[in-house]
Image 1 (cartoon, rainbow, N blue to C red):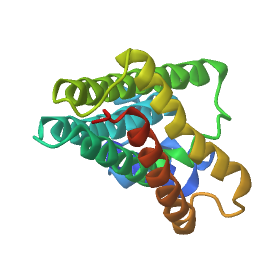
Image 2 (tube, rainbow, N blue to C red):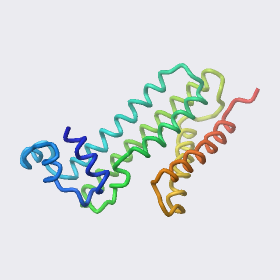
Image 3 (cartoon, rainbow, N blue to C red):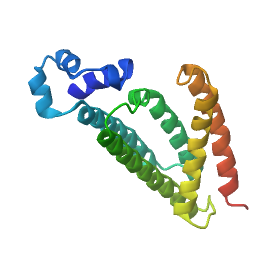
Image 4 (cartoon, rainbow, N blue to C red):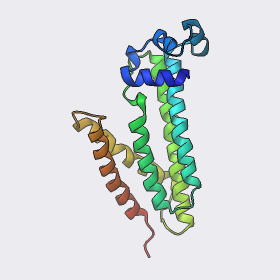
Length: 192
């Protein structure tokens, strides 16, 4: 309940404009009670991000359990990733106007997310190699390169788009990512 209220506030107003008083009022708690669960606004924000990340990876791990081709898994992962960033309310809230300590912990959350993505991509690649669908030398290096290629279009579009993070942005990102994934798949598909 607290995380949901905080998520909505952070998404709409951004981190710096939300107060703990507002969140406490939204969930009908006293401010002291809210501080019992979350000693700082940064700790609440971090928990919201962790929760969103757990939801994303929960959906991704279900995808990995499906009996589909590695190429289809890679395409599905890319789509889920875009949808995650689209729904990630706190992407807009990460203004980093927080303290240096909070910035450090957000960087740690990012690193953890990155490592989980590498692990997911490795699993997809290994599955594809086992079923004779993909050919590559090193799963870790290939997963890292694929992830870097997935980061690229979003970063590039954020630099050139004036109305970043609107529906048009995500539609364009989805089109570009489909092309990138096709290029990746064509590059690592096993030749017959």
